[in-house]
Image: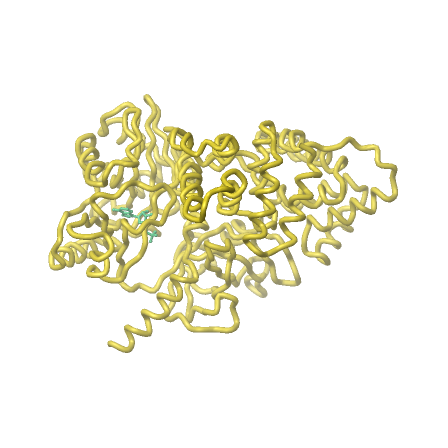
Length: 575
Ligand code: AMP
């Protein structure tokens, strides 16, 4: 396909903010794709590979500026100046390409999406000496052949900020509309669910599209769950009381510790063990001891387990909060030392696949029985997660207290008959935590500090996520809880380092940041506020920890915040 055609689609999709309009525009575009255009599905979301792949483009604003400069013959300083003025590097590329095209005779070749993907896919492969130069020529080659609107979207794709408002859910709805137009509302809903399930299972939009475009909805079920490729974890909903929880999941139900750790999805394929976070990141190298525990204490040749890894004190064996072990997720060096200092225990609570058979449709109680059969408990190494089955509120409360006394976050309530639904925030798995007043939010902006903090980002805008619209809504600013020195915890320096690659706009001291970095924030109270577009503000927010393991799709939603706001009012009223 001509890359210009894709750019024109991007343009059309950006022309409306209405979700239904976008779905119509995308469904028309999808119908025009040929079999050979399947990989365009990745480009629609600004990617070059399926979501399960860890290969990302990862081009900094600075390199993009250099490439624009090289391709247009306009100095980097001038490009940077334009960027400060316009605030969108894509628009800068468009403007400067237009200028150049007017000045020179257009002899460049027509770009195809195949060529775009070919060059972009080489970027993450480059390593070592001369990388920057090689990257620059791959990008410049594309830019030199690009028309102004192609240049606009090429640059936005490169810096990971496509801004066309197309999300996975838009693609799902558009596929259903494009290929099953005859279905009634209910039928369309079912088709969309089947498509979404297949996406969650495979994390490969093009693989799903291959089947959908042939209008073979039933064949989607056959898209295999693949051991070794990450799948999305099932997520929980929140309730405030055990009584409410019983109403939702039914009685009796399973009640388990809600461990204060991080999620690990454990794949074993023949002899190889691969570990993923719930963001689908491969963290096998960071946890060699887990690989060993799985090899030694879990029987079976191939399986996928779902678990929570929790830290404990090496001397007292007391469980420790997530903060204390969070650094293990990302540190790539001195692994052995960290392993000794910050040991973890793996608590297995689900099984998704076993010896060639997906377990997704098996009832929870059967899956749990299988876990018990194949895992030999080795405390402080790998164990079945602690749980009871009960229909008694009294017993449930006692267990809840025990979990808290054991330094855990709370409890999970699980319906005994329920299936495993990858990627969904399901109503048959619930979490209950004490009213702690904490939220997971994402940083979407910041301000550079002054004086002692000059050069560092020092005040951070926090946002929640409206899942339906895929929008990020601001709810406050945080500057407390962050340390001056990295040894003391999450520091300004660390945050600045983490966030700088995601800066998408700079104006004076303020920067706009692509929603990437999830953080946990405690607060004293949620207030209604006209100052932020979520309609709420946090009183006395304090950043407690970075959540590199959590995806932006898992952060607090406006509905949850509204609920917390109302609950807090109710609690005040009733003491
Ligand atoms: P939250 O992070 O507050 O949305 O709570 C859900 C998370 O709790 C899951 O994603 C798991 O990482 C974690 N968790 C801890 N213990 C369990 C358990 N027994 N069953 C399921 N999830 C658990």
